[in-house]
Length: 151
Image 1 (cartoon, helix red, strand yellow):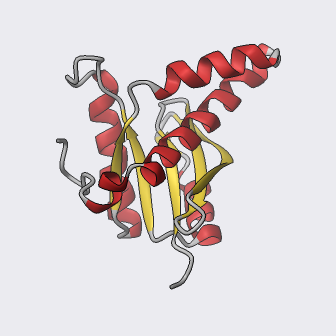
Image 2 (image 1 turned 180 degrees about the vertical axis):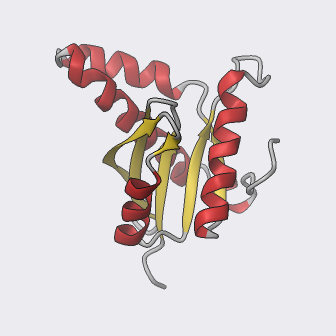
């Protein structure tokens, strides 16, 4: 069995956190941030990451309110995932990201990192948490939401 590589994304309009990991090790690592431009994501930067890592699938955090309802970012993240699918023709999986940002924000605040670097670190670590949740929860892989489904 070849190493199945996945890229994870924490979508934001100004910055998109990126993580990478391989299914056999089930360990996600930060791969940096991609800028959000006025015209949308920096697709050239995302294309470079896809070429570099050659993933078998893409994992996108799906933001929702704590009660499970959609919020303003839900539609934007779904659109981002559909565009990933249209560009790269890879399976797109969705991971509920409701609690990832809170946990990551506390961790970053505790590091004492300068505020200017915190945002990039926050976005990257959120992507790591999203991808790690995909690896940790077998139902995300076996029965996870495929592209176009919202639950």
